[in-house]
Length: 64
Image (cartoon, rainbow, N blue to C red):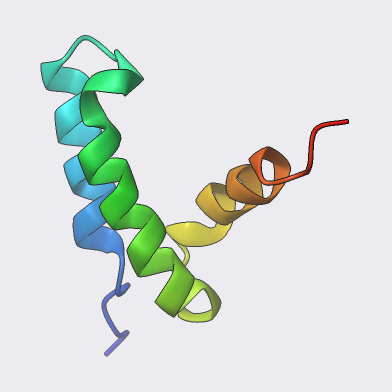
């Protein structure tokens, strides 16, 4: 039996929040932080983190 993705709950919470708030990301910052926290621990074992971590890396780049 496949194991459950460790960050699936957080990914679903982001989707629910975005839908409830007409996709205004600023209203979902708290659930996005939870996803970041989960991905910082489980990125290697979570399919849900694959795109999220990629976005994080591009926003972490130092601005010149």
